[in-house]
Structures are given as structure tokens and as C-alpha cells.
Length: 208
Image (cartoon, rainbow, N blue to C red; front, side):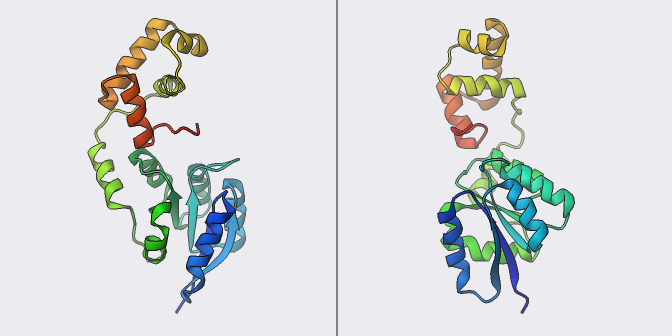
């Protein structure tokens, strides 16, 4: 039996220790390396050439999406599983667009980690059913432009239109136009509803 070599990438040592503990008692899987951010992940990948990489999304220096893109560009056959707390369909879509093979919620680690590693190593894609359904439901939705995202983040921070206009160096009427477009694309009733939907779907996060 060939041992599946695993690289864990997460900026929280406790989570990396938890993954190591889950893997430890299984002879067909071995943890060969760890990294605390995306840049380290690229270096460790070159060093260990793992069969499966577990990649956190939000990390300092370089996030998981950018690290996945960089690794897959250099190593097209890399098998990467995004490991995240986020249930949003937008992050999942970004992860798969970047070249990820799997998407695993940290809340499901103890239950699904080993099966996910084995499945992805075997060439199968893994994604939680609830997220797959959400991705299908929103496939035809309009994508927010970069400017609309900037406006939405300002709304989430509690800024009024006048403040947003000054911050982005645009007119207040232009801000109102962006807000109207945001509400329509997100099918939101008002500004607060738009922010709630955007956070739930992963369009924006409170950490941004």
C-alpha cells in the first residue's frame, strides 16, 4: 500500500495539531509537512511534493486561493483540498476555479477528513452537499463588479453614501447607482439584507 503524503497549510498551530492527531493512527496517510501561510505552502510543496495538500483560505502574507493558483501553475497535477470555516458558495467557486480538488469545512474535520484525503488522492472531487447546492442555485446570478464590492464593503463597515462617495472619490449619485445594482444582483431588500447575504455567501467577509 502506497502511503498518501499530506501537507497541512493553516496559520493556526492548534488546527494543524488536530489534523496531525487525526492522521496519526492511519498507516495509509502520513503528514509530511506543515506551513503557516501561502508563501510557506509553496516552499513546502516544492520540498515535500505531497500527494494531497490541505489549504486554509484566510492566512497572512498569501491567502489560500493565491497559493493554490501558484502551486497548480508550477505543479499542474497537485491535489489541493481547501479547508475552511466558510460555507459560502462564492469561496467554493473561487477555490475550484483556482484548481482545488476538494472543499472541506473545518467543522467536519473529524468526520470527513480521512475520506476526503483518500478520495482526492484517487482523483475524485469532494464538496459538501449543501455548498454544491448553493453553487448550483447561484450559478446564473450576476457577479458584483470590483467597484460594487468596494461599495458593499463600505456599507458593511456602516458608512453612509456620502462617506462612501468621499472615500472612493465618486459622486453620491454614482454610489446610489451601485447600491441599486448590488441590491438587484443579490436579490436583497435593503442595505443590511445585502450585507447579510454577501457575508453568508462569502462575497465579502468580516476579515476583509
